[in-house]
Amino acid sequence: MGGHSATGLLRPGVDPLGSAFAALLGLSLLALPLMTTRPNRIAAGTGLTAWSALTSDAVLLLGGVVALGLPLLALRAAPPLRLAAAAAILLLLGLSAGWAADHLTLPGDRYGRVSPDAGWWLAFATAALAVGDGLARLRPGPILRIALLALLVAATGLALRTGFWNNLSVLREYASRSDTFGRELRTHAVLALTSVAAAAALGIPAAILARPVPALRTGLLATLNVVQTIPSMALFGMLIAPLAWIGRAVPGAAALGIAGIGAAPAFVALFAYALLPVAAATVAGLDAVPWPVRDAARGVGMTARQRLLQVELPLALPAILTGIRIVLVQNIGLAVIAGLVGGGGLGVFVFQGISQNAGDLVLLGALPTVAMATGAAVLLDAVVDLSRGRAAERVP
Image 1 (tube, rainbow, N blue to C red):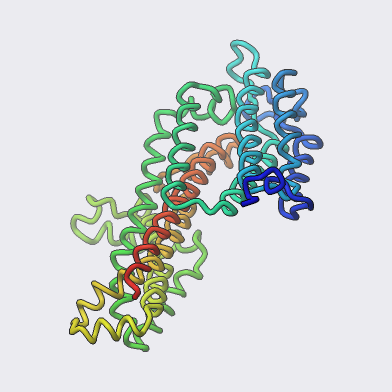
Image 2 (cartoon, rainbow, N blue to C red):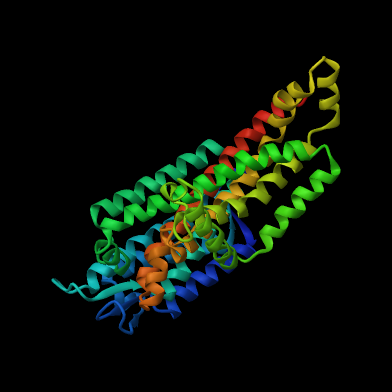
């Protein structure tokens, strides 16, 4: 009952993890530069502290929110208070980036660049971790997590559409590449999603067939494990020669886009990397089906096919979906490498930025990749929890 009382909201003592968050936030905002200004996209920058990068009103607002929020993180506050404090700091940091960019950009200046510096990035990452910690302590249900994700996506999309962050350097890089960004974003998403879908379509049936036979099961997992140990750059390179030969020698292969460079080697490599987690998760999920449940299904006269489709696979579904979640997040990140072999995707901007020594161009490719991976992880985590609830209903 005291969970909602004044004493229940703030108890004596210090929270170790929250104290670490508070210390990092204080260090990043007080001792490190918040923003960097540069005369052009590749010139050396000048780091500015929060009180130099923001107007006095913005400094007071950010400082006030941080001053109120840090004690709530460091002390043993109730999870709702901790989450509210971390979310408020995270929101103010997002707003501060836009305010600073507007404040530091001279009217009509098309070449100057304003970007977050080490202090802002460290504070943002720490506040995001604190938000995650607050959510973990509250344990919201899967539907609420999906709703919060949708709200975050909508709020970010609204801020982007209104041009709130347009003076930030990464969005200036976007403005000069807006005609290609959408195409590369779609290419990136399609590569990640289709490779995982193909791996699930092959890996799940292969695991189901191989699992009852120890020799086949061991051979399948061992073979896929060998593929998993090959470094990503090496695997992409190894695929160039055979796919180039197939494109030349097999009628119609070139018309399908199969060639030594391009989307084909990127897709094959991502597909190969996804097979082991999917197959291993399927085997583990089927192994975890309780023996009494199998015995009961056999006792009511179910055939082996009926037991598999109506009992074993539904109970193994949470484990299978967990494997798919792992490979989807993995492949969203690995798809960046496709930019090196002409496969397109957000890696195009990452490697262009590296070659041009343009950090903001690297961020143009890296930030959407991180956002996609995070969103996929949150969404599939919620789906896994929903499937666990349904699987629990099937166990007597």
